[in-house]
Image: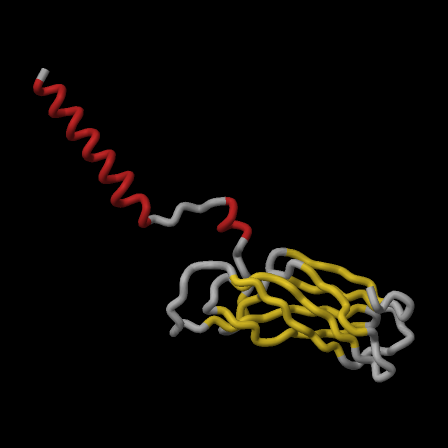
Amino acid sequence: MKKNIKCLFVLLSFTSILYFGILPGVEQPTAMTKKTVMKAKGDLVQLGVDSVRISRAMTKKGELEIIVKGILPTPAYQLDHFEIDIKKNRVYITPWARYDREKIVIQMAVPYEEKCLIKGLEPAKKYTLRVNGAYGVIDKTVTPENENE
């Protein structure tokens, strides 16, 4: 009987050490970590985008201002710039952030809301805005009639 109790105690101790001591240090893949892989370009990281709205109507100079909302992965990330590429009637917009390795921050998501000024558009033309976020794409159509939406 004492031998069985010793065996059970050793087995429980070993299982506890594995479960509480070793396994928490090993990052287990989850559905969330698989979806949150962000694209990188040098020391820049592509940001996720939640929504896009037009904040100011297209001017006669062909400028359009939009507001992009999303989430920074941690406070150590800071929006660097919007990459804007105009091809015919499509405008491709990609938000890029810079990661500061020197910052010591709490691990939490931080919402951002930034204005993006698009220049070089033809005022009377219909455009499709395609905002490329890290987790997907948001399309928005801009015509001279519905600019204020």
